[in-house]
Amino acid sequence: MSEQCIFCKISAGTIPAKRIYEDDDVLAFADIAPQAPVHVLVIPRRHIPSLDGLTEADRGLAGHLLERVAHIARLLGVAEAGYRTIINTHDDGGQEVYHIHVHLLAGKRIGPMVARA
Ligand code: 5GP
Ligand code: ZN
Image 1 (cartoon, rainbow, N blue to C red):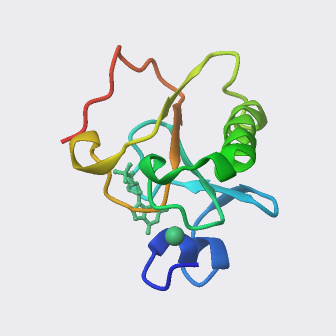
Image 2 (cartoon, rainbow, N blue to C red):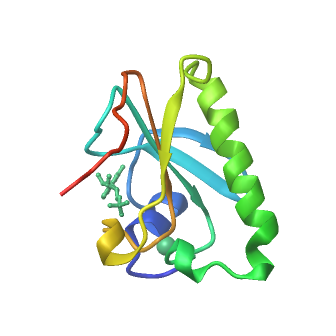
């Protein structure tokens, strides 16, 4: 838990969010500014700042996180139609919140790339 981190606070329940799925290691909640009809953020509860911060020791957690993304897409009923997953990393990747998260976007046809200012 990082004291200043907004996603750690959401994980702990001290900041509210629309929670979609949770287990001991992973939490999914609705993005506050959705870019698609379905826009969910999937995070590990453990504070890892970015994809760039992943180490060999995180392989199990990273695998679980990705598998849960697929599970959540099925849970939301969007898996068959399809969805877009994005992990933004550092400035050029457009990362704003420094707690690693996977964007899960669905519910409309998303173009070849998502570019966000
Ligand atoms: P990034 O640009 O870091 O990949 O994405 C951060 C995402 O977090 C953005 O899509 C933004 O809308 C979302 N976000 C930022 N603050 C909050 C918040 O307090 N609650 C929720 N649910 N989402 C947030
Ligand atoms: Zn955090």
